[in-house]
Structure formats: C-alpha cells, structure tokens
Amino acid sequence: MSDNIDELDARILDLIQEDASLSVAEIAEKVGLSPSPCWRRIKRLEDIGVIKKRVTVLDPEKLGLGFEVYAGIKLSVPSRENLEAFEANLDKWPEVVSCATVTGREDYMLRIMTRDMHAYDDFLRDQLLASDLVSSVESRIIVRSIKTTTAVPLKLVIGDRMTNS
Amino acid sequence: MSDNIDELDARILDLIQEDASLSVAEIAEKVGLSPSPCWRRIKRLEDIGVIKKRVTVLDPEKLGLGFEVYAGIKLSVPSRENLEAFEANLDKWPEVVSCATVTGREDYMLRIMTRDMHAYDDFLRDQLLASDLVSSVESRIIVRSIKTTTAVPLKLVIGDRMTNS
DNA sequence: TCTGAAATAAGGTTCCC
DNA sequence: GGGAACCTTATTTCAGA
Image 1 (cartoon, rainbow over the protein chains, first blue to last red):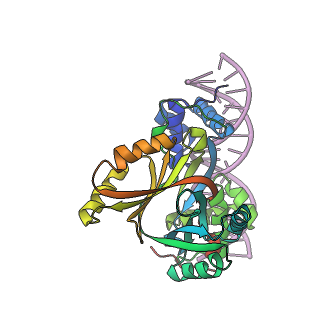
Image 2 (cartoon, rainbow over the protein chains, first blue to last red):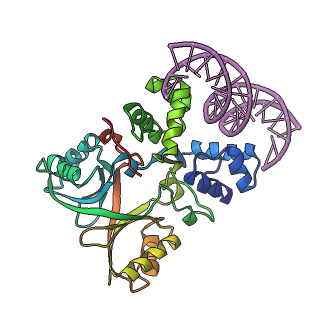
C-alpha cells in the first residue's frame, strides 16, 4: 500500500489537527465522503504514524502559568558528556516545555513556562545555573503571543507528498 | 461557584492533556471516581475555559516538513505601525507556526516549519526579507528536538490555584 | 448539594455490497 | 467508496447520601 497523502487526506488532517472532537460523520460531510471511507482514511493515517495522538489543549493563563520565556543556553563545554548530562535534567524540569539543540551562537533553545517572573528567576538560579554545565542563559520573555498553533502547515504539503519513516 | 482547580481536577487535566482519546470511564477509573462526576468535572473545566480544545497532533517529518527554525527578528523601526504591518503578514505565512514579541535584542521570536533548508531560504528571501520592515533575522536551525510537548506543567499548579479570566 | 447507577442518545467500528 | 448493523461511549436523568 502506498504511503502517499492525497488531497482528501490532507483536508481531513487539516480539520482534525484543529479540532479533534469532530465526529467522523462531520468530517466526512465536510470533505464530501461518507463516514466509512472517511473513517478508514483516518485509521490508515494513524497506522502509518502521520497522526501521532490526540491531546487536550489547556489555557496556561487560567492555570496561573502565564509567564513564558525562550531561553537560549550555552554550555561551558559542549562535549558529548555535557550535552547528555544537561539533557538528562529535562525530566526533572517540568518548567521546560520544549528543548532543542540549535545552530548558531547557542547550544539549546528552551521554552520555559512558569507562574511568574519570580518563579522563573528561582528556576534559573536553582536549576539551570546550579551546575557549572551552563555558561550563559539569554532569556527572551514572551511579552505577547501573536500566533501559537499545534497545527502543522499542511498548505505546504498538499499537492501530494511522499511520507518517509 | 468557585473557579478553583482541586487536585482531582489537576489529575484529570494531566491525563487528558497527554491523551484526549481516553474515555470518560477510563479517566474516572484512573482518578478514582465514577464516570458521572468525572464527566461533570471535565464539562466544568471546559465551561470555565481551562480546557480550550482537543487537537490532533501530526508528525511533521512524515509530512515532509522536517525542517524547523527558531528565527529571531529585528524590525528596522519597531514603531507601532511597523509592528502591526509585520504581524498582519502572519496569516499569509503558513510556515510560521508561532510568533511572539519578546524582550531582549530581538523584537520577535518565530518558529518556522518548512520542507527543507532550501524552502526555508526561499521563505526568508521572498517573504520575511521582502519588505524593508525587517532589519535582521537570526536563524537557529533545530538540529535535534529533545523535548516537545503541548502539555502545560501541571506539576507547578497542583496544591491549588485560583484561575483568573 | 454532590455522588453514583441506570437509561438514552450519539458516535465509532465493522461487515457487506 | 457507500450503506447499514452493531457495539462502545458520551450524555442525561434520576434516586440516594
């Protein structure tokens, strides 16, 4: 069976990546299919891993976690051991909601979520800077979010696209 | 009625923010409730806006969108007009999956998703740098994602927390 | 007023064409 | 791909604590 995503798949994905609570019948109607083939397409997209999971999006503000920061991290010595040692901390740090190694001046880019500036400062001093692994942290406090989406830009995909594993 | 989130609410939220496909019966069992009160709690959390929506998470790699960048943007002149002009472009730029104004050297931090480096370069030249609004772009290419979650760190909330609107 | 059990309605899943 | 039966789950209602 082909691993291709056709335009109908893309339209289905585009609907459900914005709203996972749509019923199969609703999705089917919007894309012009009947429920059965629509369900089979969704099932297939799950099976091949294009659909990873369904999640519930919460409002951080309403939970008192309105303070967010992009922190650029530089390690004192970015050796393999130090990278591993740093990354091993992530499980202990719920504040860090995303972490990636990046090119450029900094070794890591983190997205950090805390209650307020004070809690962020605590996290910085007691956790991030506690070991001598980290040589510098550049904090970019989010003043205002203009756009935040969990959705992937499917517009860039439609037409057709092979998927790779 | 109180706007408080008690520990049971937090446990429910923690379950469903990781997996929105859990049935109410399963959630109820895991938190030690029967389905009805569990369902009512979820309903209430939706009503007060703590639960924003359910979404489907797709795999960008499998859709051929494996190239991601954190781009720090500086405007030539960060006037109110220019900020608005810049932000007005976001709807036209599916590549930009998140955008926020931040403190520090740069005016905006963007997360950009494209097919590959070439497509990113096109976007940079033809879109981001096409107008004279933007004076500089610092591209931090994501080499490896260590942690990426849509979940909010509820560990920082439990205990109890008032929600604000 | 809140919990849990049972009834009902809605949707997911399968089978057959 | 579509239609219909079937089975699971969401949702509501109601009785009891």
